[in-house]
Image: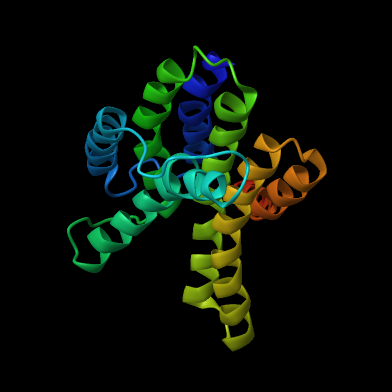
Length: 204
């Protein structure tokens, strides 16, 4: 399971880059550099939220320290870099986020290996990927969509990170049915985005 945590993110990044064809997307060096710094800082500082039991504090720990914020951070930073034109070229939020998460996944694979917990070593990397690939899918719809599509996409962007943290909390609390439900809510946009990218790649 530690090997899965270590390899999943770089392998999915290579898969995504091949599917989308964005070989030279902007900000790759920034993503690896800032992602490595943030991962090291988080490793040495430890958790910001102390989890206790199976209640709200556990959910908040999943949101802030483990699942949601670590995957949202690269998307927010990339938006900043693009807005202020610090990066130029082909913009791809997902590529940037996946690259950012690779150093963090490697550090977590080592630090979590002693626990040998599938929730941490398997579920969490999947949830990171769901956020990193799902939210940019709806961002692209907002850029090009009409009013209804913009409203729907905005709601989806809010739901995905909340569902990801809730999936972590539900599986940790041994509520598997709820865990799979929230996992589906978080991951389906990523799957749809991947299918659309495969279709576009086949048409080119």
